[in-house]
Length: 483
Ligand code: GLN
Image (cartoon, rainbow, N blue to C red; front, top):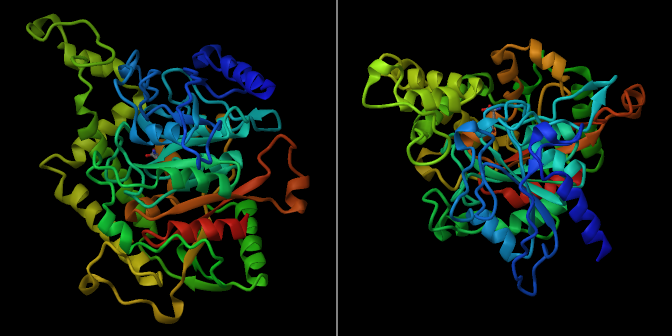
């Protein structure tokens, strides 16, 4: 069909590395048109899906936007890619990211920065990260939907900054087999799409146990999860966490959050203020735990087995740095090197008690905060260890902004310190630490605000819905109510 041919032409335009990508385009590359034979009931037949380039594909290279993996092609497809192909989808392109998923703006890729299609007064905006290439593929319609990964917000933040839907399922629902690890106790495959229904249809195809992933939820646990309820549940009890009303929240985000909440109240849902006291510490705990896991996961990139190698000799250190050190020094970008050092320090005998162990304790407190407010009980916690429910303050879901600000301009980013940039993850990391399902839905700015803005700006705010572990279908349902 002709639409297929024109889409193919669009995709071929992306068959380039970023340096050669046309202005305003995300660096998407390695185009493929392989479509697997599909079964009769498959809803993804003929759909083009972009895949974040830290998810391996056998027919195209996968480099996680890192020089250290330059030239690497996996001998197998990741389970989620296999599932997509089996459902009749075609992998349109591999989408660029922040190197190994470490970042919030998709600016650190070896192949070049991802460009947002949006601008503010002529200035380029951040597309969000680390799944920025996936979000841009959905916005510019070179893909119908895209897979991303979310370790601390990397599906939700780019969705918010690009005005699309970004869904991070409960940890363990989607297979991580073939997903290049960043921080494996937090890494989750997620879906970006133009609507909640589209994201849901991709999620449903992937939501199965995978014996190859030891953290994939087994059938016994899946049976205990809230059943996928296609019927409309009645009015919802919606929690508004007090601790999310922080001073860094900018007026457009604050006002859109409030107007979304009042629309939900008018539609018959009940709003309940709740308290999640460990929210602030969650961010610090995340930035200890994620780098600690990364420093261990990235130790395997040594230039010996695969990827890029800087010539040198291990045999005679007198000739300078050994091969292993040279390869890693040149193969990893600055942010990744910084995180490896941070993580290795947090795990060192000198620091482990004060940093890593404390952060693990905070992680447990974050989970307990959520267990106190959700009516649905956490299926992973023994009933005897479950904290007491808040009673009158118990809720079905929580609604918060996805990020405290609208997307910053690239120029603003350049003036930000690392810590200021990490701050943008304050609303997304708590769900990651507790493994909860969370979705970012674009809610249009009020006409009063939207009309005064540049028409090329993102005229929506990402609003986040969180649910108890395993209540993914309820979260998706609530997102449709908000949409
Ligand atoms: N911005 C966060 C980080 O840099 C989250 C990244 C992610 O979810 N992959 O770690």
